[in-house]
Length: 294
Image (tube, rainbow, N blue to C red; front, side, top):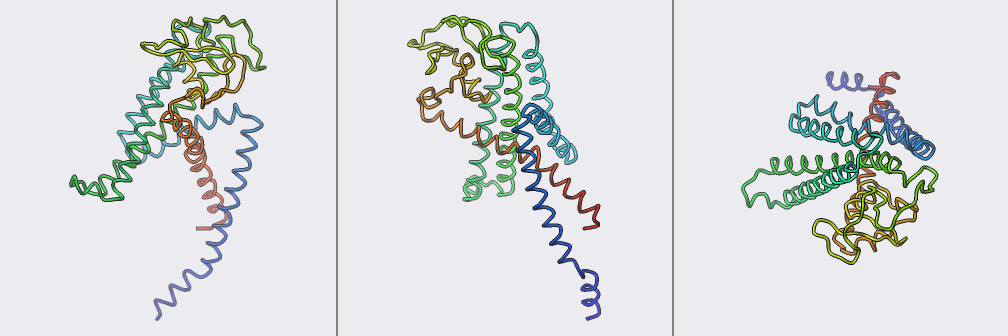
């Protein structure tokens, strides 16, 4: 009875304290969301740059603290290659081979991250249904493997997409067909791709050996890798030359390719979760500590 009384005395007032902490969390989340939305609408360039930096650094802090050496190895390899690609994309004058190199790298990264995420999700679902037991794999091992793959796929999918956006802006403005005002800065010939500025060798009606040629609804033609990279990887759903909105349903006649667009929308949502959520939670903990709420 004495111990019980001491416990009650020790935890007296904790209900009110917990209620205050929950209220602070809710208010901070709402205010932070409003601030982020306004920042993104009014100053999109600075918002995207800060978000990209946090996407790159925040997971690095936690994984270093937890000694996740496999992730740190992949992060280092990704950072080195992407830094080189970004360096090439920001050079002036732009080398004629750079745009295709950039788009191919980010398209490859996009496909790898997409496939990795799908495999990870499938493993998690199989584990939940107990299919792992057929192969005599422990549930915890199977779940760890699936969640790890899902994390890798989503993280590098988001990060690669944001770097692709940055490189697409730099290259398009350097090539000269795309300007901030929306007006083309030089005439586009019928046999030139507006994304990379290189000649188009395969006719729209022909089947290419390596890649096909796409014609948009505005009648401008592009290399397959270039326009796919521009629209899907670079998040630019408009013609690089005339700014007309791209009809993705017409562009991707194969229904199996359309989920890639939905996957891109999922990455937009996850960007907020990975880049800003830890910062907001840390801010809430700082407020609680300042007010003496523990």
